[in-house]
Image (cartoon, rainbow, N blue to C red; front, side):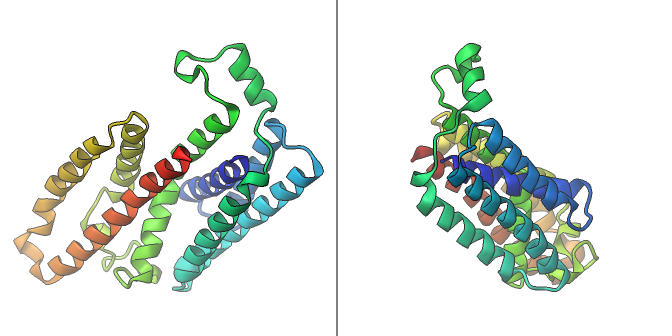
Length: 244
């Protein structure tokens, strides 16, 4: 599971970096470096593990470039295909990875917090990775799917033609609801996630029923439904991964 967690961390850090400082190369370079550094700190320093870390770093770099070109050149399918392929491959080869250890395992053994009592380094690493992935990466995946389905035009993101300008707050509500769903699932109360769905529907209802701009109501509704379901799939997939 350590390779899966490191890939998730690298991608998540790259996307977070891009949301804070959207420049070329730098965010994905930071994400790749963080993935390698964390891998070394958790004791993945044998030759096979080092080669795996290099492949993970290269994948994170490719992800950053693919996302940038996907939005800039209107090719959202490419980064989605890369994301799906990379995680499918790493899940298949995950059993070959060594268990995480190093400073993380030493810290857990020395002075674990009560909530972390009995938690392995592998499990903690995957938990952190799953949490990070719910933040900016979730938003990126949602917008890529919206663009790939023609719900939004990726080359006009942020313009008046972008439904997100109409449905404001999605970039903040999305991570909040994903983290909430993930937390409920980890607590064994996944059915309570229906509260999130109901609350979001109530919050968006006035915007979707606005009489001021009926021409775009159908487009906004499609945007809301597609984006919401894609957003919810990410924490659910993370929970399935944590359950293995």
